[in-house]
Image (tube, rainbow, N blue to C red; front, side, top):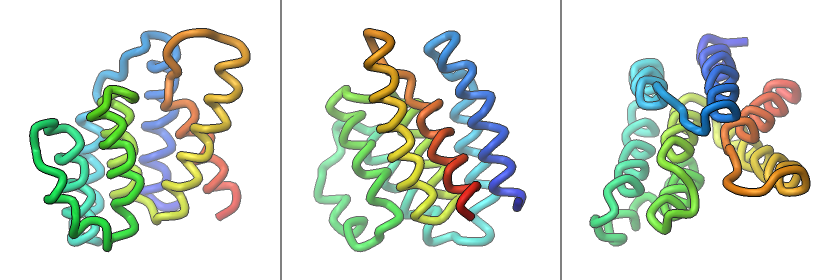
Length: 150
């Protein structure tokens, strides 16, 4: 297991417990900052594109035309999708920042498996609970699936 995989795994484990317990994820901004510090020297273009997609999602008054170049960069697609969900108030800001951090650190299949893990978690959560769905345990489930396959 590499440094980036272990950093993501430990962070997401702690964040998942916090998300389940408090419905609030303190320190997710520090996680994104840490992923930038780890990933920027290795893949600066990928990190810049993903941060641009994350900034588009967070800044609700920015134009969608800024994202057209990002459509040609597949690693930014999950971040654009979650950014759109954040702009429409479907998901939380912490979820957008977590997926952005994963997209900076890990390859495209890991992010897709994390989103699939989120879907599995959502189906499990809806059967047992009502109300908002904590997304980070689902992302952790997908991350564990990626690490197990890889």
